[in-house]
Structures are given as structure tokens and as C-alpha cells.
Length: 242
Picture 1: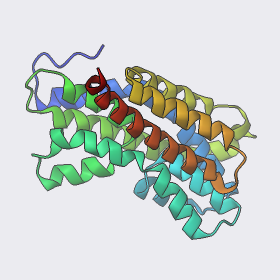
Picture 2 (picture 1 turned 60 degrees about the horizontal axis):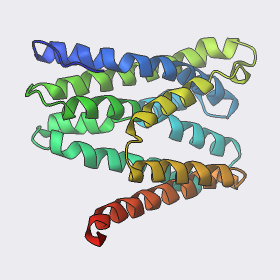
Picture 3 (picture 1 turned 45 degrees about the vertical axis):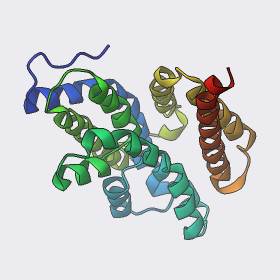
């Protein structure tokens, strides 16, 4: 269980954010290494790979874009697919708005850019803790910067060391990221909307796995969001029926 710093300060909150994010970073390391190693074989240049990690900074979308680039998919399909996959960040942002809306733009802009699944999972718990620390955004910054730095370093290592390893992409290291995501999702499966979202999205993703251009992910995302909204409305209306 996460405990707030005993003496909140910008430094203690920043370090606490880094510390809380560390377990998730361990799971992300193989993911970053494999991305860097795969990029060259997919036709993306060294500079393009580094720039994608630095500017896009969205692991799942980067892998999807890489796969689509390798098959010569039209750029509009790539943009649409990554856009839909990243729609979950809109939900993250909505959840964070009450906690960051009073911050100046010099804080909100970089924190928004650095928002990832891992950072959201960590910082939303910190923001929701009942203590009145005025430095929780420093905790957010520590988590976000740690994740960003790790992703850039792993991409670079994948581009250099990873390319020297024979068939590194077949070692199954990417499974670590799947385990990390499972660990992130399970604590949130505490009500019917969350359960419905996860079960429907997972079921649709499996059923549509064979569709071309990762279209199954789009359908799974939309189906999961729809199921979550439907379950939420049903839960809200339920007391009125009794």
C-alpha cells in the first residue's frame, strides 16, 4: 500500500513518485529494448526511432505504428489506429482534471505530454489520498519523468545493444509488459463498469485478433468504452428501480 511522505516537500514527493513507479518501469524495460531492436528491421531510421520515442512517447501505439509501417499501410490508417488506441488517455485526463486544473500551464502541458498508463495508475492513487500535501504534482512529475527517461534510454539501448543480440525479439521478453498491464488493471476491477469494460474489451480483442491492420484493437476499445458507459448508466439507474 502506498504511504504519503511523512514530511511532504517538492523533493520528497518527487522521489516518492519515482519510487512508486519503479516496479512498473521494470516491466517496461524489455518493451523499450524490443521496440528499439525492432525499429531498424521495420524500415524506420535510427533518427526516426529516437524521434518517435521522444515525441510520441506511447509504447503500444509505437509498436502498432511500427507494424503498420513495415507492411506499407497507408498513413491515414496508421494515424486513425494510433488515435483510437490512445483514446484511453482522454479518460485518464478526465480523471486527473480535478487534481491539476489549478496548476499553471507550465505544469499542465508537460504533465499532459508525459501521461502514460503507468504514471496514471500511480499518480491517481496519490491524488486520491486524503492528506493535504500541496506538492502532489511533484509526485506526478517524478513518476512521469522517470517513465520518460527510462523509455528514451531503453529505446537507445535497443537500437544499439539490442541489435547485436540474435533474435532478441523471440525471447518472449515482451511478456513482461503484458504482466505489468495486468497488474495495473486488476486493482481497478472493483465495480461493474470496470469489470464490464475489461471483459468486453478483452473478449472483442480476442475475437477480432485476425483482422488486418490491428482493426481488432479499435473495435475492442470502442466496445469496451461502450460497455463501461452502459454499465455505469445501468448502475446509476438501478436504485431508482427499487
